[in-house]
Length: 190
Length: 190
Length: 253
Image 1: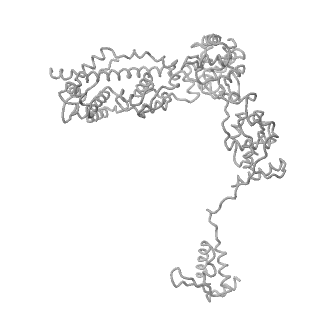
Image 2: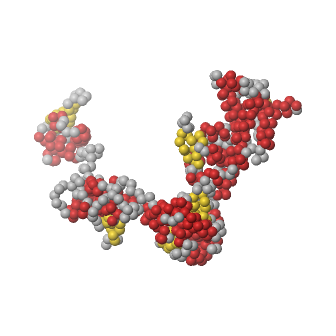
Image 3: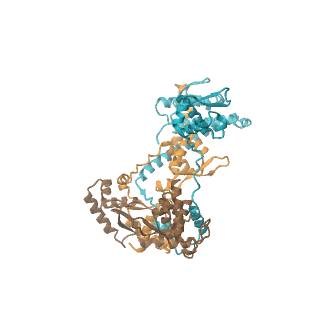
């Protein structure tokens, strides 16, 4: 590998975000064409099956990733699955997704009365909720995952307990949704 | 590269900490000897000057590092300036902690002749030393941290230069002794 | 390391005037007792000299300070009651040995520090990756996952969300009282009764309403519609419809 290809490999190794060829060229203070050549060389070196690393193009940039073949071993070595207690924001968000699923992100925000991005993000990252498509307006729609049912010891979503403090009239799900939205609107006005 | 060597490379890529060969063997569910062979293969592949990555033995384990050749470009890309060099006070204090660890703060002060609070503070802040409890008299006791070994590229504390290298020479001793005692004589003779 | 021990410092103390190293030899020969030497003054002089040379970085130990610190320790041992017997017998040679040992010990770490410093520089080109694990490795695997959360937590959270929020507490906000309304309130009383006692009519209102009513009275007085009097401070206020006010009141009505 030539010096520039080595340098590109170093830079991609150190960066945990995708890096564009332009950014690589600027960092190495060379012409873009040279970087493109170097990337091609590196790409050939890291072709699947050759090394433990692979070169991926993600969102217009380049990123090094580990070979998926090693995932099981990596999990054994590194994975310390975390199941920390849920924060109130996470519990509320998860409850909304669990009881109303599928539910779009703006609806979660309306019910909680606050933007719920960070809670949705951490629940997705932990694999408790997952995207189930997009709404007509392009908003992500969420549902709970199979992992959710296992970590809550639920035999299916129907096994969720009745919401506590909820009056016992046999309200249907639609009514819960409306009541949640109504309460949420009052919250965001307050 | 064979499959196991590729796997080892993947695992080292994913881990931010040095990994022992034993841990690699357990993760890959193979015999230690096989991992050692794979590491040898990887070591040859990543010998300095061949790739952008270098395999290093640090802190009792293996870790991937970028080639120092790409340091300037990497700092530019990640906009990470170099940390300042060690000051003399920090270097002396670090030497005392490294060679005498665990060592209490008053002992550091006794050797250096000055209270070494700020040096101890900045070394702790840099993560190079850490508290390892309290002495009977309540003084903080320090030792070097795992980061120290990583930053200094040491495969464990035993890899520090042999302390006898710093033994004062008989000349040093004679010089000091004369300086302490001879002034009066010289002057009275003069 | 070929750095010579630097002990050059001119002293001007009560017991001694001259260079520090001379004092040191004299002390070590026990011609002056260490107990009589003001070590603090010596340090102060040394620090002043460093400052004059623009080198004042107190964290930087120098052999000079190591030596003074060692002397200080010897001196404090001399001053300890009871310890004196042992130490008064300390031969000058022993004190010298102790000082030499301390100086040599310091040199050892000074030199090791220099080497560590160089080593640090030589290693700074190696950079390590610090990236979080990919998300799939941070997650619990479905197959091995166990129950860790209580579903009741979700039921409770949803219950909280179903509860409409409590009505906002507005007690900290001041209710507004309209001057116009108070004007018409006073006028309507004046219509039915030409003379009245303020407290009888408005004493049951809250303080704010009473205050605005007083403003209304002031306004009516200015317009010539009403007179009022209070014979003593904080006493009753008598309000009286004025002659000139008749016409106005009639109009308003």
